[in-house]
Length: 208
Image 1: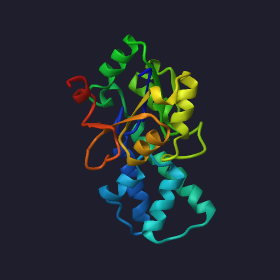
Image 2: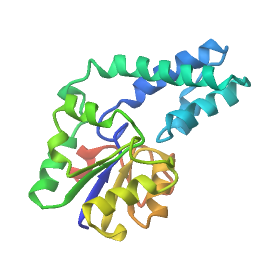
Image 3: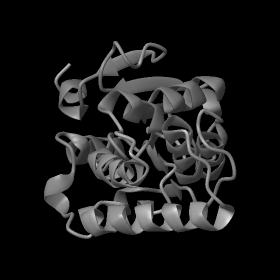
Image 4: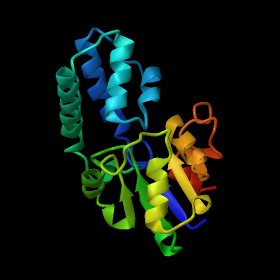
């Protein structure tokens, strides 16, 4: 394998909990309680598609102006949590894994739906490890469409089948498989059923 492509939320850092809190607050405005189970369906999904799902679950429709206002407010709320992040928020084993990949001359890319990927990587102090960053600002289609990973592979100059994708969401695993890449799940085998292999985290990969 010549390249590693990483999702951000739930793989490198647990910003998924911040998304959950911010979306939960939006849902509560409409008398809707977002559960952890339903939140699984929002992982790896764009802000617009996530809000569409939440409004659908809540059984409400809003004007396009209100929709935009809700999406903007959710992002501001999310960023207020992100603002407090630092290197201690990197998930266990990630930095060691990135250092190992660098030494082995493996291409490293980020493939994330987040439009805040760059500032987050800077706050974590690991942006320099990434040869390529493809985020929500660079794509038009959300996972499970493989666009984000395909662009990352192209920018790295590596064939799809020589890429390994690290993902914590079903949509992301599906996107990787559609692109013809190897999909490594970070999380639970019960949830990430389509992954080629599943690990609890990068410590588990390093210790195998």
